[in-house]
Length: 159
Image (cartoon, rainbow, N blue to C red; front, side, top):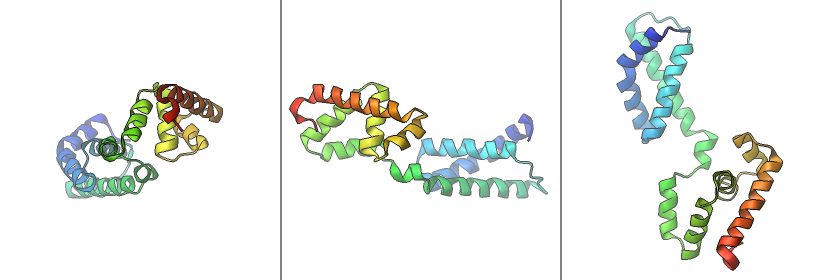
């Protein structure tokens, strides 16, 4: 494991390079920040000995590219839709689907998470339980309670 001084030096030297590479691959500031953090955590935990500054820079670049590629092919990335795209889809959707999405988004957080992951992302209750680190029966209960709240808010339009 490296010292904090070594990590600070590496961040000072290579931060711009890492961010630029991430933006080229990911085209998202938030995802870039996540990968940036991962790269320098790997640097901190690495025990690799570098022969020269060029060798160190090449290592940082390779790790950055690998992290970006891994992120792009990750299960989470393939199965999710950015919120701004949901807003665009909602604008193009019939009036009732926008109403349903508004009702879902107004649910308490624990219900909203379960409903969104189940109905919009297609996860099973068992998968949601693993993602949220909850009991499977808790997820079933949250889904049932969320459906009841949606039924109250939407009336006959629900289902």
